[in-house]
Image (cartoon, rainbow, N blue to C red; front, side, top):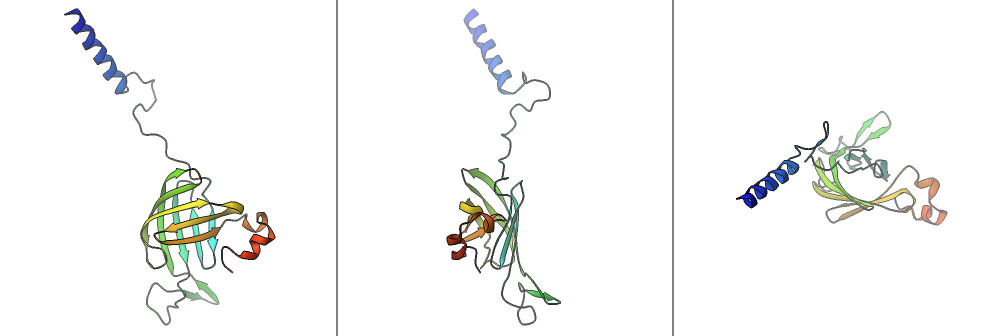
Length: 163
């Protein structure tokens, strides 16, 4: 009988610890791990005709040229404001996980699936403030704000982010 009582006390103690009942006041026992940090990815990335803004919480927005003007094509299309072209392509998404130099997530909305398809995406950081964005079968190299001052001339001459 005494052994059975000790076993019940031990099980009760384990349950008490597992539920967080013994956690210090103000702590969040049993709460999920803190969200990953996307600060290394948080940039204004660009390539010819495409801009991607990633926030420190992993939210992202993309705008791009469709190379079709609204005066001659249905949306999505590029507009004109005076003599300035306004990008017609728009997409949003969020990064969810980080593993080393790669963050993964998804495109949650887009108005031009041929350029920015909805679904999984990954971004892998590269040398000289560059990154590769993988969208389905499409891979895009984008450059961050430090690319022009950190990349050697031979890399700059290759124009990895377009003309």
